[in-house]
Image (cartoon, rainbow, N blue to C red; front, top):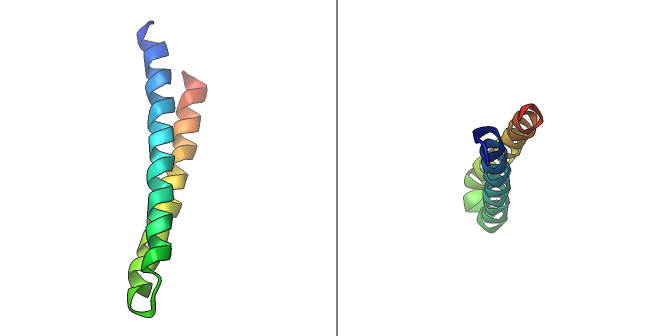
Length: 65
């Protein structure tokens, strides 16, 4: 496997890991969404959304590999 193929493999792995993390943020936002945890839940949802945006960059990078 050459360096470019290896990078493609890594990008795919990182993208999968990134989505797992995003789902964890969303799950914890649901758990934190009590009246006293509303602000924390909102932050976790923002983390979820921003992490999903990162996957678009991973996809873009994969197209270039």
